[in-house]
Image 1: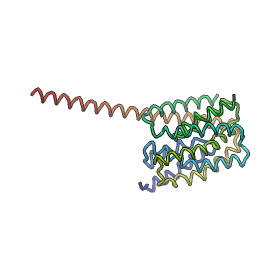
Image 2: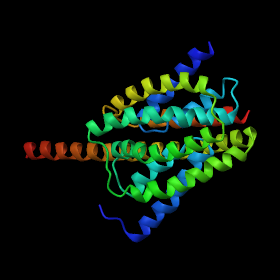
Image 3: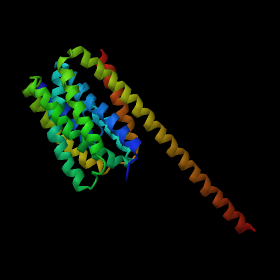
Image 4: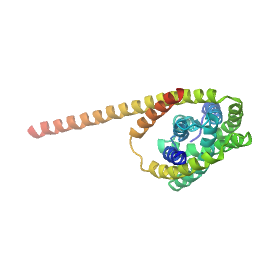
Length: 121
Length: 147
């Protein structure tokens, strides 16, 4: 699909916000990118979620490089968490192709709110 | 025990992340249960995402779910600001980062909830409408038969 000039600038501005959030908060930019791919590029949900990973990979790589360079990485917990994340990631990628309905999304939203409230205290 | 929890929390967040639903938004609050400073948690999140993302992308490419057209409009500006964001985070205190993340989570959660509920309502309305159509079609049919 060809994007209009207005939509291109919208993508540039909002993906810059996603990039900043991802670097500053160490994650979370993906949620914004998925929304952009859905609303502006007009991809379907599954395609938007998969393609968002392709967008987020390079910017997470540069953010991670800055964190490493500035000495903000503690390697032992990182290593253990990474093992879990890789196994979970493979399971999640397989599940996406089978995912139906809206229930997962509602549960996910509630988990986020609960996580946010927990972190305030 | 902490190692077990790190792997478990990583696994749970990885499932969400592999689906492209934002695993980081799950891993960061989970890790905040363990006694780890916010900046270290964010670094764990960024670094652990990289190999997971590569694995997930292989699956998505096989399932033909990747749409490469137009994505440079997103990647290039995001790349530049990601570096800026990471440099600002380096200067910020753990408390500031934690509160910013908490506010971000609540905002995203509320927004996603609204989107999901709206979607569910529209679907229900459509379902009811098609049900009504089929019942009225059936009544017409019976009427015709009676005549």
